Length: 255
Image (cartoon, rainbow, N blue to C red):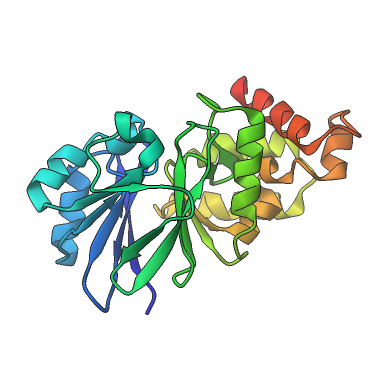
């Protein structure tokens, strides 16, 4: 049976994700920007938290871990490479390790770029990937610590997942990301359709940070850096995919 998921808005534009294995009742949260909305969601669902999964060290993703752990006794999973700047870990993870949540096992994927110790979690049976600030809805994270080459390779690793995978990102930057995507890829019909749908979803109050990988591939300009027509439109025919990605990331940084 697939994991049950609840999307929890936190702070100004962050998201946390609650996951429950229906067979065993184990419950995990992916990232803890704040505790209050997570406690409320757990209480509303009648779920008992058992695990905390951390994607990276930024405060808006780990700010509530200590309090949540103290209140629930949940085990904390995070990257071994970042253990020195994460809350104390019960499970120090390396790329390729597995995270077990009841009956389902998820893969740990190394996705440096936004930070050098960033990891993602892929639960294939449930068709879910938690990418936080690496691959984001219509965007990717700013390169605070890693290089464009690292981020492009990280995005390629995520693009290798099945197209039906739902990508769950760490923020709702959909309006700014959508405006940027339209500015650099204005002739993309799939993008125009997505922006129209997003406007309806936003008006209805639906979460904006979850989309299929297939949709991201069709509309997210950072995943389309290898496309010849996009390079040509930006006067960059013949450059490497990494160079095109770096060009797009630079444009977004000043957008």
